[in-house]
Image (cartoon, rainbow, N blue to C red; front, side):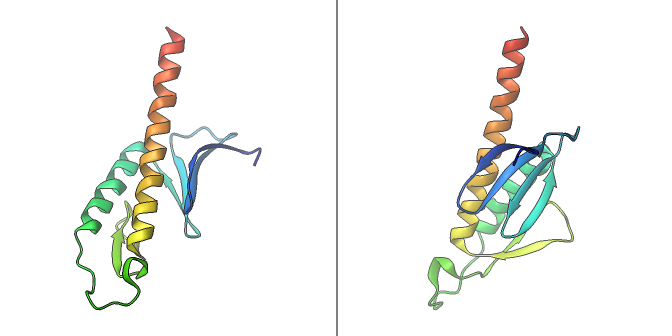
Length: 114
């Protein structure tokens, strides 16, 4: 773990930046899938989560909130994921926590420079 700077983590995943790589991209990993995302792409992903929340679930499904019937689009037009309502909430928390931490770090860096 010495090669990364952890930004945020929760039950479903982690976000971080590589310590020895100059990049504006953040690595976000959940459900064995990794994404390299810019801040704009993180925002886009959050909007796609909002869109996914509007999908109707099967009313007779016995799995309830754990049914992986929600199709979550990603910032990549070629990648979609089937997730449950529980996972959708966890992914949303991961992305919101990541954005909050990135912006807080930027703010603190700006304040400390002045």
